[in-house]
Length: 273
Ligand code: HEM
Image 1 (spheres, rainbow, N blue to C red):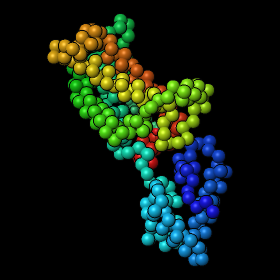
Image 2: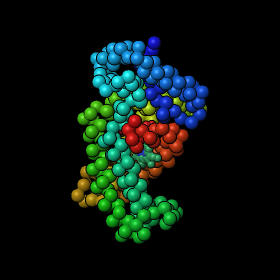
Image 3: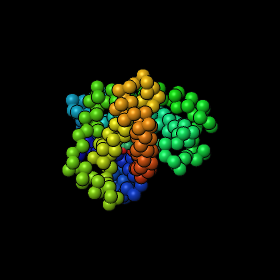
Image 4: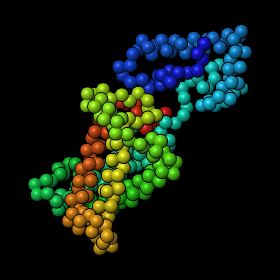
């Protein structure tokens, strides 16, 4: 009898809309049958042996002395965090900081547009006027930079960067891109990103670095002459800053639509599992 919980069974609570409900129902019944089987007095010793074996096995919590005829914890929904707390915290701080930085940035841009004829509607800007917008921008840039550094450093130190976001293989990318264009890109395993997601996340991580560096060159062009030169001068640094912001906004729009299409990923980003 297959008594280990299957992956699909552990993911039941996250099943997306459109999931085969009859399958969900029958899997629940299988779970209930297992529970009943182990609750029978004549099967308890099987269960005791099973829980002991589980303790020695992988991916389990260990023998459960309080099991008392109940299913071992390993047969219930996995308690493993797919998105660790530090990823969730830095992700949501980053999202907040980006929204405040972009909307206050639009107000600053409107006071001195880079491209003639391109202005942002006042209703989409933050700060009310140039001075107010600068205050928002300068206050939240520290949060954006500090949070970004924490996120990147922890990803490198924990080697999560290589486990979760890299490598991006050209073959997988072409296959996933083609599937995405046909609207058939699967996101069944929440513990893994597909190649398109990986690319989008790596691009946005690099893009935020460009936003920060070009912003520094615009903010302190005299103090950071090398940065200013690398950006092609002060005026060019403003153009680089604008385009990096546009990539960030484009990512934001597509990202939110994708999240809306796979709502269980939002649950993972909120509670971790
Ligand atoms: C501009 C703002 C945002 C940026 C730069 C951003 C960036 C990212 C990045 C880099 C990841 C991958 C994190 C990792 O695994 O290390 C991610 C994942 C995720 N983000 Fe965002 N995000 C933003 C806004 C949002 C918003 C507003 C939402 C909610 C509607 C959201 C929901 C999610 C979810 C649910 C995931 C996990 C996706 C999955 O597991 O498939 N993000 N985001």
